[in-house]
Length: 457
Length: 43
Image 1 (cartoon, rainbow over the protein chains, first blue to last red):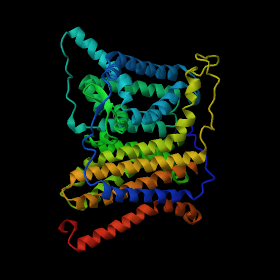
Image 2 (image 1 turned 30 degrees about the vertical axis):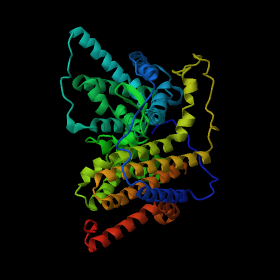
Image 3 (image 1 turned 180 degrees about the vertical axis):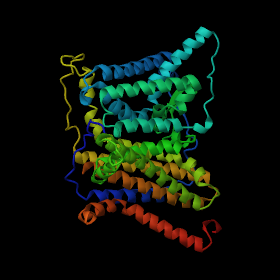
Image 4 (image 1 turned 60 degrees about the vertical axis):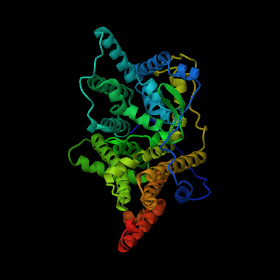
């Protein structure tokens, strides 16, 4: 229940009812589906291709110096979040810590990753500190120091799913989750858990599978045409990064958390949840919880339901696809098509938090000059600036949101179609399996637009 | 009475999901029809 409002204002001048946009979006998906069946007879994304940047530029961007500088910036920002959270003014909107973590980091880094690639990997403060400690230890020992434990294969992305769920629970469930001091404490706790895990399993093993934010931004980065391969930077075919995604245990759960928590956040702002939540809270109060804890428990149940709804709907879709034949189990198809959820997650995050990012993101202009929110501090001379709420109108925002939702789901359809062509040996079965994926995509599109309309009610 | 009082909200919400409900109904009908005819793989 973040104090910082999502900056959404009501629309009033749409030419047609908002629900008709949902019908139009469904029509776009059907037309895309037919066009793919006719015009895309062979898989095209499995071979991603690679066009390298000029050697000099690539060498500079991937150099150790740039890596150290980016890591140092990440560590500096981590310390600033903790320091401002603990020492600054305990007002969410006037303190650097919650604004940076919930706006710039959690939301702002999503479009950056989708456009430019895995930027977070370069700035990841936990990875930078872990690698530094490992380097110092190995230099002192004068021999390689392997990790004490091998990362269990069966865990896959499950620790990342738990980490992401815990973070969103802090943001959306805890009544004091956006208080600067709590943000700083949560950052310290997460850092401690990450350092212990890296010490046990090795820095890269934990960062690539268990560290929640590396997995989160790494998935979005697979949408980017930019990639680092064999020590060189270059371009690959759009969407081919996702076609190459290797599904591990917990992949579907991570994506269900990513989409489901946004779903709950959207529904939580609308009239349906505002009618249900007091009754749920009353039920928890009757069990002896205080009013505050009862409301948090109700929101926790809502968050779990949001994730369960998305996971269940996806499993229903792949269950339907398995029923058309081909000898695949729903579990196999769940892993086969799980990468198609990434553009949907991107569409959900970008559409839902668009105005939040555009409005609240401007707060960084004055917070960089006064990160602690104390009177009289003005480091860069921008402390007096304010948020311009005229940067985007409500109707324009709605059109951008609809466009993002439709684009994300069309991208998901393309990925599913391309994967079906390499999965099924009979073209007829490939197309029949995609009827079910089309239902999943139309369902997620309808849900996304309904949620956006709920937020604007 | 509460449900009736908020019927407008429910109908508008239902309108958003009409396309997916239509798809599910159509897919269910196609699946049942194909099973009666021997399943999609037999074709």
